[in-house]
Length: 232
Image 1 (cartoon, rainbow, N blue to C red):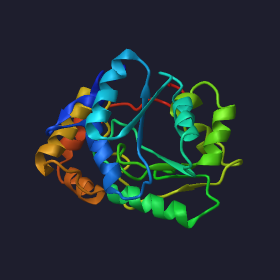
Image 2 (tube, rainbow, N blue to C red; image 1 turned 120 degrees about the horizontal axis):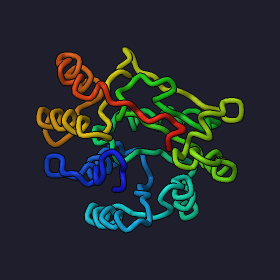
Image 3 (spheres, helix red, strand yellow; image 1 turned 180 degrees about the vertical axis):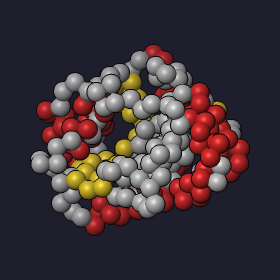
C-alpha cells in the first residue's frame, strides 16, 4: 500500500475486484501451486492488505517493510515448499497459462535454481513469472545485501556463475509493452484493457494482439520508466 509512485495501488478497484484480487485469482487459476501466501509488511497502512487477504481467503504473512527477502524467508520457515513462484501484487493481467507453463518447465529440470520469463524479457512487463528454488533463496537470504533484499530474487539471477538459471522466452517479443501498475498512466491502460475484455485477464497472446492493433493504447504508458535494480 505504501508505493511511492502510486500509493494504495494494490487495493484499487478494477471491475469490482481489487488489483490484489486479480493477482490471487490468476495464481489460483494456474493450478500450479501447492500453497499461496501474500507477503506484505507490518506497516500500519498494510493492515488493509491483511483485511483483503482475509476476505479473499488467502494466507497473509507480515514482515519487514523494506527487507522483502526476509518476508519470503519467514514464509519458507513455515512450509515444506521446495520452490517459490513469485508474483508482484501490481500485475493484475497475469496469464494463468504462462504461470502453468513456467511451473512445468521448472519441474522438468530438477537441478534448476531459478527460472524467469524475463531472462531476456519477451513478454509485456507485468505478465512475467519467476521461480526460485528453496536452497537458492535460502542462500540469498544468508548473503544478500542492500537492494538485493528488496528485489528478493536479484541476488540469484545476477549470479549465473553460482546458480543454474534459465530464461523462458516467447516469440515474437512484446517486451516493449507495459501492463504493470506503477503510475496513473499505467492505470489508464490497464483499465482500458479490462473495459474491453471484462472481469478476466486475456491470454498474453490475445493481449499483445489487442495492443498491437491499437498502438494509441500502448502509447498511454510507453513513456513510464521502470526503476533500475539499484533503485530499491
